[in-house]
Amino acid sequence: MKKLTLTFCALFALFAAAPAIIADGPEQYSGKKEVMQPAPPVCDFYRAHEWDLSIWAAWAFASDTGQIDVPNVDPFSPDTDPSTFDIFTGFSGEQKIDNPDERVNIGRVSSNKIFARDDTQGGGVDVKYFWSKYFGVGVEGLGLAADTNFAGGGLMTLTARYPFGRFAPYAWGGLGFIAGGGADYKFFNEKHRYAAGTGIYGSSLFVANEQEFWTTDTIHNHHIRGLGQIGAGLEFRVTCHIGLMADFSWNFVFGHDDHDQEFLITNQGSNITNFNGALFASTPVINTAIGLNPANDSDRQDFGLVRFGVTFSY
Image (tube, rainbow, N blue to C red; front, side, top):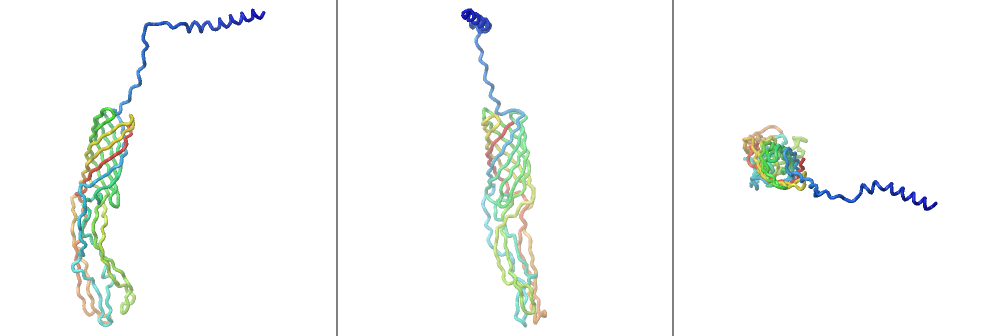
């Protein structure tokens, strides 16, 4: 009985496995060679209808470097302060109303009139759209650290490039504007220390002493100027969508036509002599000085710009 049972089990297993055995029978040779599927094509590193976003750091250097030697001079001639003297009491002094503090611009110190120094750092961003593989239009924004403030602007640009492999040399030109920055000027300063007077003038304030000194200060630009830019550079694509860029551009600043202008300063007062508080004599005192109005022109503001950054391409 056991043998019969085992026989039926063996036959059942054979019939169950038969279809699989027939399906996986010996391989039939068709006479055709096996075709290998090609690898996916490498993406184009530079494409038509491409958007590029570049973020960069920059080093800028002025076209006019160095400083102008402006000597420490007293611009007032004669430098005589109005005073009051009373013969009866022997009191002498200078009333505050007759002797204002003085501050006169006597000359420009920095050769460059946008950075107020020879070079500086900054950065910016530009966005380009390439309607073909070789040409694109864009918008650029830049900011640079002037001596004591900020200079920045924006441009519309036109770019031409010639890609080969991962590299693409390019050249561009742009037009826009720039604002901010400034120039360093030397100032003559005269400061007065006041003290309360005595005698017939009661508690009136009088000049106790004077201090003359010179300072170099930045006068900021308050006019928007035109900006022209031409440059050339090289981009290297690390991947199909990320690249490294480096370039150099020369920037032309143009706009207002006014230059540093001199003007006459007149301080007028009187040397008064009293006798027991009554006017005895009065002598006019007129001090004059030459001051300087800073320029609004665009001379001495051109600069070179070296940029290094990363580009994201989509």
